Length: 137
Image 1 (cartoon, rainbow, N blue to C red):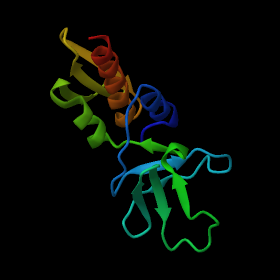
Image 2: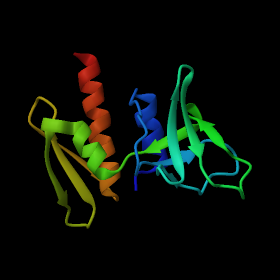
Image 3: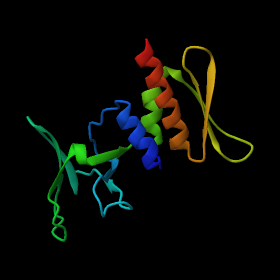
């Protein structure tokens, strides 16, 4: 799973989240540091309003939390979502000799390698670099 640091970096870089079933997220409030939630039509649904997106917690009577504004949630994109964001720039996901993960992407000047302990973090580094490349054009 992507690190909280990289998820926050993607958010700061301008990555927009449109919640969908299966998406993982954290609540950015004290007391929720170790909790990861999943959007599901049975438990947590996104509701669109003129004022923004609210995540509704259905059937969670043991909680005092009924809903959460999207700006208080931190999306934790999955590997497949990050790979999709890379699009045609993605070339390969490989294991390194020291059992780390390496994403190879072409950001316009040939292959660039992004290495991390977790595949999602290697993808996140590549997406962040691609976002920087796109922003500079």
